[in-house]
Image 1 (cartoon, one colour):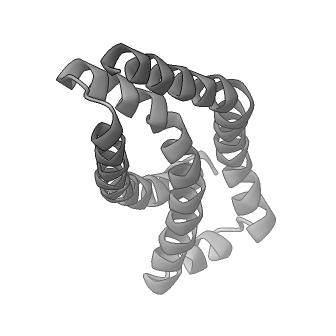
Image 2: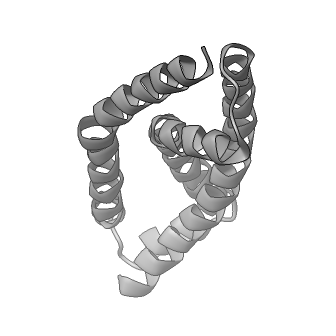
Length: 141
């Protein structure tokens, strides 16, 4: 079962990281455009732009991780099914329930990461963004 679990998680990880990088770069471009709208009101240095980007990063990752994880699970398992590798698992006596149990720890880790992003980082960073923009407006006025 260990080999099958590792093989299945490897198939999902290959899709996850490629999807994550693409979605992360697309979201980064969108964030940079939204930061550019802030620079119309407030003059910012490169360090300030980087700081604002870091403040916006957890909110973006909060939306990217679940989309990427779900897509990676679906596409990874579909690829295993298409290549008849899931059929081999079943013929070796590995029940579908065991395959789902193999994914359960990964689902718990992803849920814990999302919980940290939503409860711990989201609100304080939103307050920091508002405070940051307020300070920069007062400095340049």
